Image (cartoon, rainbow, N blue to C red; front, side, top):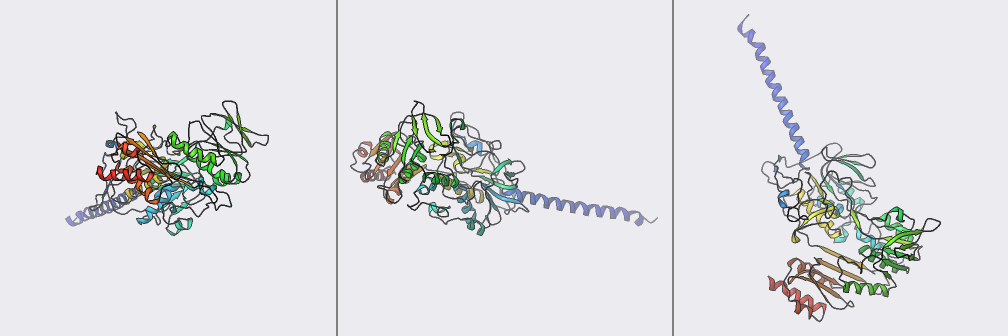
Length: 530
């Protein structure tokens, strides 16, 4: 047999074996690249673009040994590097970005995705509500106005009109290519497989997940009447609709709670000309913010409008009649306050289920623990708004803020960090406000704003009519400021004061003859401190 005949089969065997190996290597590389591309959106990013993107993710947060409520920055800066393609896509039913929750944070996050060109065909919002995201504060303010006093209604207060932006109705989401899943809350998460299961059984695969589930209303136990007919809680449009229907038929209203919800609902009940009583266990209204003297001013205004207060009271049970409707509120001292309508406003709890077993929770302030870019302990999973326990940078502590302003800002910061090279941490200035008695025919519309921290000594300037201000000084520095009935220019000054924390002459401030003069003294202190 010729030598060539002997070698020919071996040559062809080696040739095809090499070709086969190269082909298999090529497909393996292509599969790996596709896998990496699909994983890109699931990995938190600090971008270092060269031929790809360098990404890093936080490990599980830990508590500082000296400050149990403050997460150390070290726990969020253990780097893991990945190099991936700068583009990312998902096939079939996979969603590149998923937001769970249909409130303010979801709406503002959606707008930010749109602004960065990353919404169309890539973003899905899963909500338990029947409506597109809306400005939730309206529910305890304008929504509860009497029917003849121009109450707020959807679509009038969809996000993002609360901050002067475009009204994002359900059609807006369709036009922007955002998938909306309504009335189908998430019931389970598999963080390893990166899937969500909804109440209807839908299985959603995600690349990056933003948890924006907000809070649920704290409820009275059923055994003391918490679920009786005529007992109301307010967290969504359905709750507000039910309350409005009851207000139209009620005569005697009892509001339980002296915080934001209690004050706003009581003011609305006055507009309906109803017999209104507010019951709370503390010594004065809004004790977490108001000083006793400031609270007294508001209480007097409410009393002038016919509202009665029962302070320092503990509730034993809610009583019911033969028809099962609430008839009164029984106190621990044995007395009973008649009512055919009861509104419970005793606070809220972060809605962490069903994510509580997957992510790290903060046991001090509640909520899902995140870093300054709103990244949870799991790569590609974020939390924003009421549900996020985040580092409050300017006060060096972990905090959870239940307020619309934080919901808006945290959502925007989170999405920008996810989609761009933004790496600076969230630097939030606490801000709270309330508006009451705004309906037509009201003798006086009330609107206050607060910025900063209410620590140290409180100095009150001015009379409630026409305006009043409270300044909090700690070690000679301004820490917080509240203003009632200010002008637009005066309200714009407040965050500047609280952010700069200027040194202020206490005696000089106390001697101010008016709110205007006090604000001038504080404003001048900014320049002096600088």
